[in-house]
Image 1 (tube, rainbow, N blue to C red):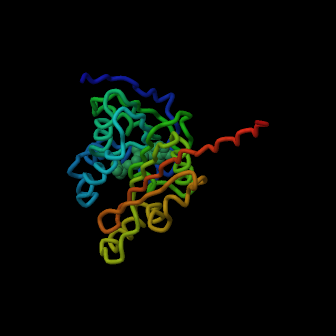
Image 2: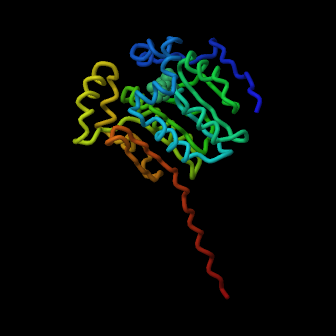
Image 3: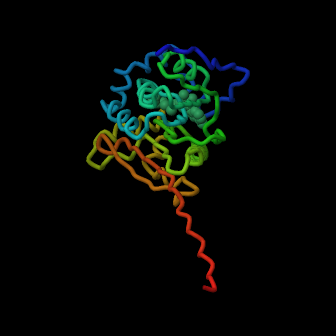
Length: 245
Ligand SMILES: C[S@@+](CC[C@H](N)C(=O)[O-])C[C@H]1O[C@@H](n2cnc3c(N)ncnc32)[C@H](O)[C@@H]1O
């Protein structure tokens, strides 16, 4: 399938990068060399302790071919490509991000499907409904108020019957000794990551009861996939009028 170079994002139309991205992750996301290095699938696999393939494959399984998918935040490695392949040529894939350099990096990978890369902040709904919304390794980077906004914006962007897929860190199991390494690392470099250990994703949802929730953990509970499916309301038939006859 031919690759279309389209949707070049004009920097004048770019959204402002929030302070938490600039101050904490800016050195990585704004630096082309570091970003390209981290984009290597071998590096991503190393950083996810060999679980990248399983996490990506488990996201892909949740997605239907020809569906309309929104992703909040660009990612390193093959995740976006794998989702694009599953959606296929007749679906729609919108990827939003607050960092122009990341959008351009992903766009320049020339993935076969036409992906609509947009400069947009995931704290606000786009105003369109999607079959699926993906937040892949995003939440742990967000301060608490932003996290709540992104989760609720994602939940409000799905159609009835549609789903939001969150993949992120989780509190490791007690026997998982890696937590003694990860905790100090997070405290030094990822200040909001520990909140993923302390609070379940569904507790941020304003309309929690409108969704059915399921969770799966990986790597001795180090990672989680949480899927929220918007329930289809059951409308009760109005009682038929009593008749004289
Ligand atoms: C989705 S995470 C993924 C990084 C992770 N290390 C990975 O590849 O698995 C990082 C991306 O999310 C973006 N981002 C952060 N906050 C955002 C927000 N509120 N709305 C949209 N994108 C956001 C960042 O600019 C960055 O490009």
